[in-house]
Image 1 (cartoon, rainbow, N blue to C red):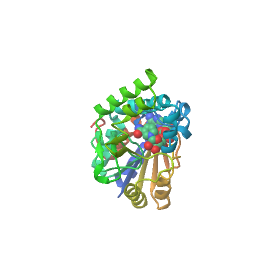
Image 2: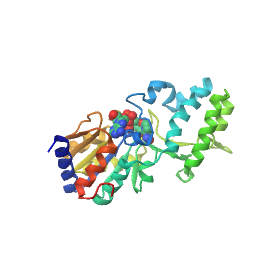
Image 3: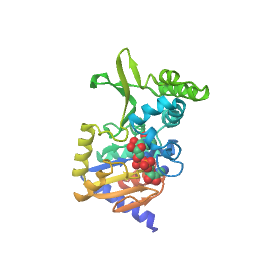
Image 4: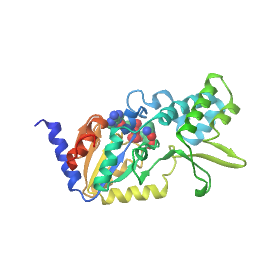
Length: 274
Ligand code: NAD
């Protein structure tokens, strides 16, 4: 039997016999749904420097000095997410959750794991489809259709060379004022603390799991990158999936959509595409 098949069997046996499985995902799992990753070939940061676009103060300053660039950046980031559908890697994780009661922690803000059917997904970096204000009760859901409309508005800002006012009008459903009450997208940018409850759940899951599946993450975003280390130092076996080798016990190199369905069906004796 070739090495890949042997590795998948070994990883499948770990998943099947584990008492507590933690699945930890990053942007790579959604790449085949058409959402570009941040790092790797043609990553977002190659076109837009992190200083001006990845922190709230940086973004605010950029809106004042170059609203069309910010509109262009946001349209390019949001459009693929607003149009994306879950892929078979998300569906395989949903199946894994059903079979093993796995805990799912994601760094993604695209909501695709939930669209694939998963409940109880811990979103460490928030969600693009929720806006928030100062109180928890003011959280609101934005639909994918509303998000697509918003993208059209953002594109008009750069196409028609509109200024700050045009930008503010276009972004308003996601970020702005309702009367005097501000609202903003519930996503974590660089330099911000993670939501306490999400971090506590993720930390506890990492501490108590005995098998962790790490899918499609470069492992450079802190403190999320600590989770595999916490799991490993508590004796969990780590299975890494992606083209780049993460720090793990068993690396299944390649594309998540090719590996995950086979892995989950091998682990639980299901027909592939189940
Ligand atoms: P990253 O961009 O830093 O790294 C992506 C990783 O996925 C890389 O290691 C890459 O080799 C791997 N990859 C690429 N294609 C893959 C595939 N088909 N199958 C498996 N792996 C693949 O992403 P990150 O580590 O998640 O950190 C980036 C941050 O940016 C996160 O905080 C996340 O919130 C945010 N982000 C989210 C989305 C999204 O919600 N879909 C997209 C881009 C960035």
